[in-house]
Image 1: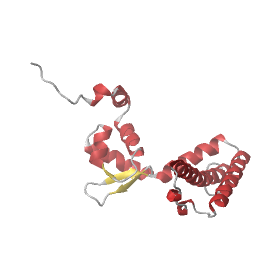
Image 2 (image 1 turned 180 degrees about the vertical axis):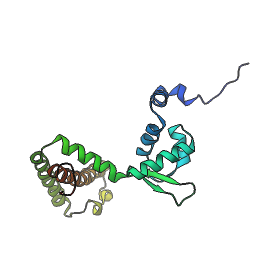
Image 3 (image 1 turned 120 degrees about the horizontal axis):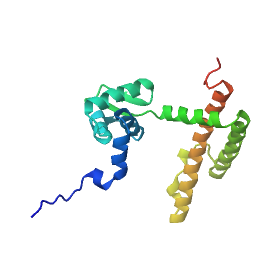
Image 4 (image 1 turned 60 degrees about the horizontal axis):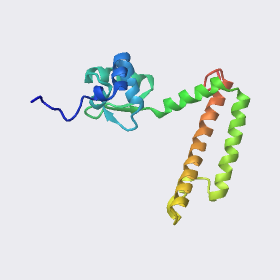
Length: 178
């Protein structure tokens, strides 16, 4: 009787992962992996996901940390890394600054600020985190309130991004005037 392995090889069940491994170099796989990490994770775990040796992962993670793309906790054993959300925000603001004019950015911020004021009036606070979503008795009302607070928080984030994009657009791609 032939041997039966109840857990198939992940590459057999996920052709996308096999394609990623075959077409992306080690640095690219470590980069892709760290962008998906939202909490400090050991370099050995990252190496496992990126399908590379721990030494290669650590070398590339240290480089990504030097570039500001990742944050490193080298004091822990083994060293741990996570994505740097500030880098991603800067990258997104840079994209906005490249795609929109200063006037379009200002218009977008003004519309976002009007929407934020509507939420502040509705919930009688300027802080979305102070709103309790579970004070409702009806499931649909709870869900609607959660969606509203989530949208309100996203508006605050977008205003910050568009303001950063405006600064960059006004200063030839720099955050601070030259």
